[in-house]
Length: 226
Ligand code: SAM
Image (cartoon, rainbow, N blue to C red; front, side, top):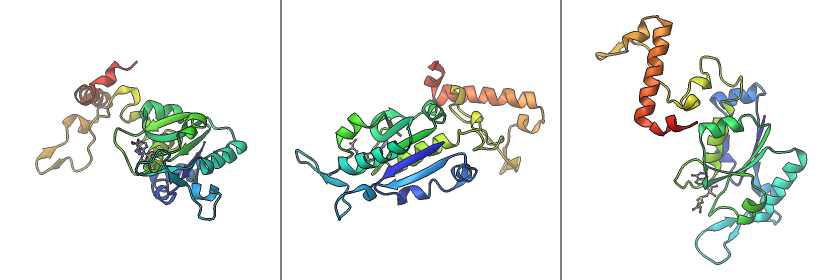
């Protein structure tokens, strides 16, 4: 799989995508992640990527030309399954979206900045718009890193069996059960006996019950999903 990210501030993306599971997936060759600096596609000597908004008002707008040039160049080299724009008003990122995107071969993510991008890019070049929640961040780099992380950990082989994404929250529309590690007792706080019992079937049953209870308490709407 290949994920390309277009950004005006690529430095913000280096660290989140260079550690842990994402780094291991990159090292194993399971995913190729390329970060492109939109300033490299600017046409003036100042490498401008933003300009004033037509109609006035506060804040700058990402210009159409550098983004168009970058997307067209990348598209001429490969076909993208999705060209995603990170946007507060996009569809909310869910585990289902991440599952679907993890099956793609090539994804391009455009991280917005300033007041956002010229609407014509959204109208003509973007195939999907994704929000990571109903709040506004300073730029789309953190959302792009969040989307990438959520996708990459689902690629077969990215995680070891013990870490398997299948036992995480939201797979099967359930939240994950509580987890414990040593010591079995700390300050009088005990780990549930069943987890120390060695009975695999009992442990599985307890975990499932805990998942169902947590889901009903914290995310009751998940059980309504098909
Ligand atoms: N003026 C925009 C609005 O009110 O919707 C917000 C612009 S925000 C300061 C700059 C960029 O950050 C956005 O264009 C988008 O790419 C990204 N961004 C901010 N919050 C986001 C969120 N919750 N989900 C995805 N992207 C977000």
